[in-house]
Length: 210
Ligand code: B1M
Image (cartoon, rainbow, N blue to C red; front, top):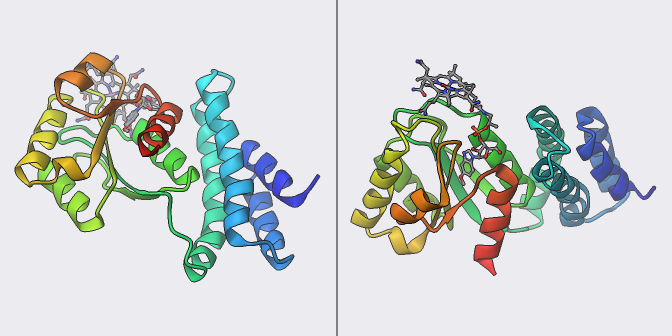
């Protein structure tokens, strides 16, 4: 098996130490860091996303794969910066004000990073003002909002209103997600997209870029 194929395979299996070893080896052998990212790490995470969507993988497998990807990224990140490789886009994400659930949000973060985006994760209980400041500061292309409670999903509307008040609404696409949400809710609050799961978030955002 070629080394990048082996790397992708070990991402899928969630073998962090092996991913670390193969990433170093690929670079030592003279592979281009972007090729290692695209054909090794991202290729592996794409399979993980597809399996997750098809219910062949569950949350633990995705978390383990994402941890393996992070091990590879730790080595690749400085090399990518040195070689001037630009991220696919900048993505700010957080769980809205009043809400402390972060497992789903973290999955979305990891999958987006796995798809080649620069991810700025603001954590949980994020106020509209903090989202607006992060979008502005990072010149984000996409904003992901997560909510798990029916009592906090209303704060998504507040965040979109704050973006509009700050004159940033047209600069960033807003994608929302979380168990109690629906496409109708996303439409009603004026979001640009709704993602029922982490793999769909990546797909929807990539489609928006086309
Ligand atoms: Co909470 N909780 N919880 N909880 N909790 C729920 C959500 C609940 C449905 C349980 C229940 O009653 N059956 C219920 C909400 C009811 C409602 O509002 N309708 C509930 C409640 C009531 C509460 C508290 C109020 C309980 C209390 O204190 N009385 C409290 C609230 C705290 C707060 O937030 N202020 C609370 C607390 C907690 C814990 C801290 C104990 C813990 C959170 C730990 C953590 O996140 N670090 C917790 C947990 C674990 C859950 C359940 C059991 C699991 C949530 C989860 O992680 N799912 C949950 C019940 C359930 O859902 N079965 C429940 C796995 C995760 C992978 O799925 O988050 O849906 P999910 O994410 C998916 C998609 O939704 C989507 O992609 C993800 C991956 O595929 N997605 C996005 C999510 N965010 C996205 C953003 C995007 C795109 C897609 O942006 C682009």
